[in-house]
Each structure stands twice: as C-alpha cells, then as structure tokens.
Length: 263
Image (tube, rainbow, N blue to C red; front, side):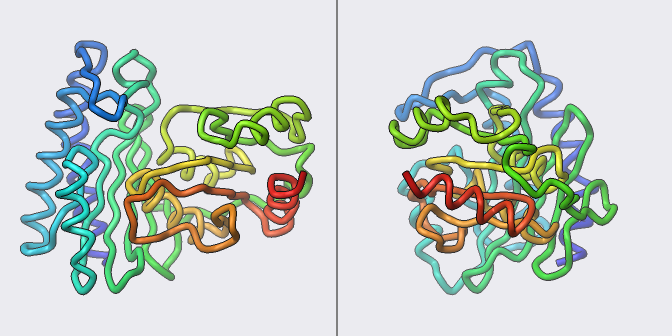
C-alpha cells in the first residue's frame, strides 16, 4: 500500500495541473441527467487517472463518478475483488464557477475495507492521504487532529443544509449550536479539513461513495470520529447516498451526535 501511495503522490499533482488547472476559469459546463454538473476537466482527469491506475495495478477495476450507474454497480458487485474508487474532480460546481476549492479523490477497496485513500487539492498543493492502520498524512508529514476544542459552542461546523432533513436543517439554522458554520462545496476536502483541525464538526445528509470513501479513512487515521445517522460505520460498499456525522474528538462527537439525533 505504501508503494501505491507513493506512486499516486508522485503522479496525481502533475495530472491535476495538466487536466484540471489548465482548464480552470476557461471552461463551460454541462448538466447531467441527475442535475449535477460535468466539465471537460472531469472527463479528462478521470481518463488520466484510469490510465495511471491500470498501469499501477493491472486487472483492478476502477469505479469513477463519471461512469454510468450501471457500470458502477457492475464493478461493486465483484465482492471478491479489489476496486479503485475515484472522483476526478470533486467540487465541479466550484470549478465551473471559478471558485478555487475542488479536489481529486482516490481510494482502494479490498476485502470490503478501505485500504488506502488520497485526496489532492491542486490549488493549494495539499496532498492528504492515509493507509489503513498506518496513520494519516498531509504532504507526506504525519497528520494528527488537535483535540483542544471540547465543546460545540467553541467549534467550527461544516454543514450541508441542502441535503439534511428539512426539520433538522431549520433547527440548526435557528439554534446555531456552534461558534460558526461553513460549507465549502467539496465533500472530499470537507473530510480533509476536519482531519487537519480546520473545523471540528461535520454533518451531511447524503454523500456518494466517491465523496466520502477516501476522506473518512483519512479522518479516522488522523484520530477523528464519524458515523451514519444510525450510528453505524460510514463506509458501505454501496452506491446509495449515506448520511454523515463527524467530529475531531470523541467527546465532541458524542455532543454533536446527541444534538443532531434528539429533538
């Protein structure tokens, strides 16, 4: 796994410069059937990553966001195989509107576990990564969460109100139980910035597999906590959108979970 991660960290920045940054603020977008946006950068970066991963690990299938759902499901149904899961450009809306917050997300699934995750921020040149049970890293330096914030009232929260149940979204907006709120538009980077202690709380009502699979591993390996609304682990080998509650500290996570799940 360490060798694979080294290869990714050597190759992905150059691919991102070539396929993503070269097109930034110069591109138009199209609307997909599900209402989300797609650009030439999404498609070019996905093809570039697929080519790289096939060279690195011949025979291991790659599940990309820009594939059809039928293609994605066919790959996931191979339960006995390793699978790469990629989001070539997470934050396409930001990218298409000229907002410099977007990322590339790559994860390797094996034996129904997430073994490796990497999320690259091409604007800031930040590479977040993790290997299962071997820690998290930022630009190849160990990444550990700062656990000084222990109360919700002192915490910065990343909240995606759009995908939360209406009553919960209204309650959060009305009661404002934290110090301040942010929503940056790249789900993969949300996980990384939580792992880097740039915020302390996170809630999302429906992330896709490629949005969370690498990020939840990075957060966990950095010392953070996360679960679904029902308390189960975040990762599921499924295309169904998953809810997320996360925090940097176990005590803070319990406070946040109690608040969100109790009227």
